[in-house]
Length: 248
Image (cartoon, rainbow, N blue to C red; front, side, top):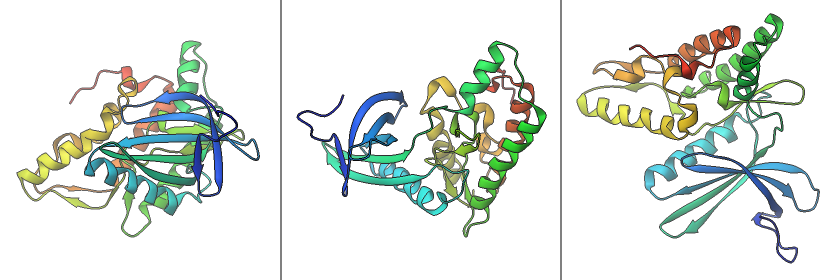
């Protein structure tokens, strides 16, 4: 992909970008490495095609969360975005900071293959920074739960900062399960984002209450606390948690 006759592939306001190459694809989005037309600076483009009201609301919620919390040093910065009409839907184009080191999952996978270990000091430092980002979201009014914290959703900066990303499954807390209809609706909602990338199934990272959504229960930011405990164990033992058998 690229420019034809010097024309940019994407324009957002006064900014122009050329698409260099795709580098990742999920069930509902595709990621591209792009270059700012004037400066040559590299960015990440997340392109999402939405064909339903639910999809559109999910992306708008993701954008809202990014704009509210993107100033935190451990949360991915959304530079700008645009939405354009396409046949039977809307295409969102989101420009993010590009991190060439990739995700923490990538590092853990490589280390696991050669039985390498992260130092205890680094484990603590990374974990505390992730917790700092989560705390900011939980301290907002109303509290916001990320709901899909996992190594694949943590990027690594050149100075080894963990950068929390992918806010498409966030929700405002609390959610009260009043009846069976609420339970079924929330089960469907909570399951939806976790099917987006089959190769990195998030199910083992899900808090127990998200599997049942019992009538009378309350779903809140504690779902992220569960994940952070699992996450810390994943750091320490360096086992790809998705491969472990989940016993309900």
